[in-house]
Image 1 (cartoon, one colour):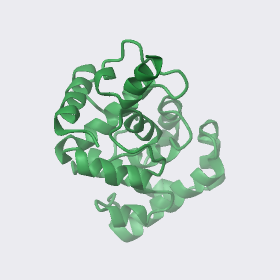
Image 2: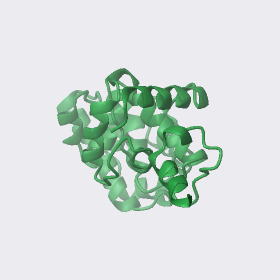
Image 3: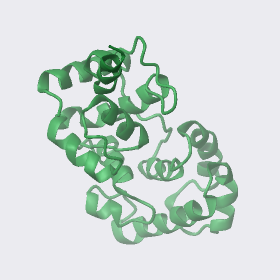
Image 4: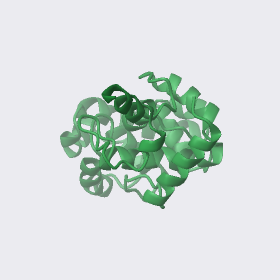
Length: 216
């Protein structure tokens, strides 16, 4: 478990590197972010951002999504992968938001995770970005990097990682911290070839410390 001093250093360093700490998915309406996050599963945000303009132009309202043929939706999101399942989820999700929530994206974990295709990661992101609530978005970048740093115990289980982050990460920092983890994971702490040499978080990284110790 990281000390409060170490966590503060990590948080402040990430703020310096990524002052904005924003989600990279592009959207205008609340439900568009929800749908974009669903499309981003096992797909890059960059790819999703290329797909959604045409998708949202063809289906400009929740009503149009709810009435859409999933096959046609699938044609627009084909390059995102797993397009059949994602298309069905978008159509069904639009219907539920209209029927059960008056056309408004719900604002609780329980309501969000009851929607088709919405898990805790997506729900946390919506709660943080749309509703300004403390949110712990445990995607692959966050899970990998927090484990390497020693903030978490290296678990790959998103729920376990979320619980551990809640113990050490101040609620007011949580949402932007997780967005910065994504950016840092793309730039520096990549999955296969992390740029450990010169890493700005090296002084507080358990993995780096262990590697240096092993060389002695």
